[in-house]
Structure formats: structure tokens, C-alpha cells
Image 1 (spheres, rainbow, N blue to C red):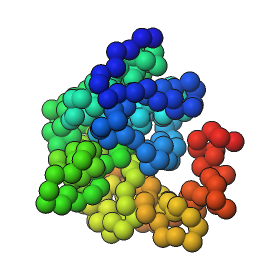
Image 2 (spheres, helix red, strand yellow):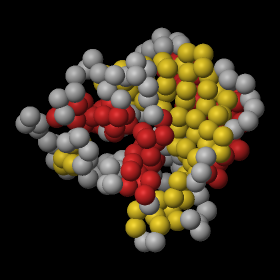
Image 3 (spheres, one colour):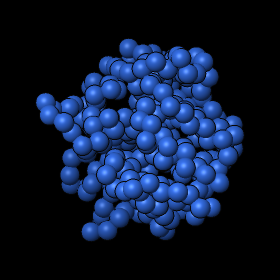
Length: 243
């Protein structure tokens, strides 16, 4: 399908199920954290899935190819990013009946979606505290318009009882995540720390919490190691379909 590209845009091959994505060289582009989160969230058949701050639409796109029988939706405040995401769906011939994306502010989530309407909510949120000056791609990277509490509230509002919330976040903010999710009645059930190499401290973590679940034991999974002996680990090769 011929899709018009705007100045600065390009089509990238995801090297998975012949998927392609439109990205802008001067805007925020997805990274490995989104790919790892899509694998970790593992949507189930018939799940109703919401991506908060969908950006380029990479999370619904990757999850759809893993579980095409789920129903995906996404909300994005940046109209330019949303436009690219919608054209990406056209490029891959994915109908709105499977992935539906719309413009909106997750801080006003009740204006766009009914409560208790999702089985799974995912989010790769902005997780850097903005410094005093202007930051490139600030809306996508910095907590200027979306805080952890905003994300947690939106997830709580959307999820059915025992629905799941999955996110990726800096490992050093674990205590803040635990407190914030608990305040929103989201009980953490799984955590997986992401290490670039086995002898390095984790920079990121994958978190799964259940709406209305009891605060109790947390499954701390084996660390996810990105590189071993100078090359991608076996698990990274699996996730990227390089095996």
C-alpha cells in the first residue's frame, strides 16, 4: 500500500511478520523497552487491551502479531505521533476492528472510555523528571504531561476486577512504583529486572499488577539479560525472533 510520508519520516522494517512502522527522524522513536514490554504483557485471546500513550502504535502492533484474537485500543495526546500510528496501521493493512487508536489525554481518561472496560492495560510511560530547560521529545520522554500517578489512575479506572496492568519503568524507582500502584488498588504480582549485562545493575524493570488483587507475595522473575559474551542473549534473540 502506498502511504504518503511527511518530511523527516521513514518506513522501518520490524523484521517480524512483514511488519513496518512509520517513524520520524526528528521525533521520539520506540526502543527495546517497548519490545520487551509487548512480550512481557502477553495478551490472551479475547482480551480487551488498552495502550496508554501509544505513540507510534508499536505496542498494539507487536501484541496484535502475537495474539491477533485480542482487541486493541490506544490513546495518544500528540496528534503528530497519532497520525503516524494511524498511517502505520494502514500500511500494514490492520483494520480498526482489531486496533483502534484515538487522540486524547490519559489524565481525562473518563471522557474517552467507560470504566471497567479493559482486561489488560499496558504503558511505556515517560519516566524522566524534566530538568529546567527544554528537552527533545519532552512529551514522550519526560514527565511533563503524564506522571506515574496519572498512568496508575487511568489503569485503575479502565481495568475490570482482576484485570492486569503491565508497564516498564526505571528500576531505581521501584519503591515509588510499589507505593503508587498500591494506592490505586493495583497489587504487584510479577517483576522482572532488565540488565544490559549480567554483571551490571538493572536499569529497567517490567512490572505486572492486578486490579483489586491482595497485596502479598510478588514473583521476582529471573533477570532478563540483554547481552551475553558480546552478543544478544538467547532470550533477546527469542523476543526479536532472531533464533
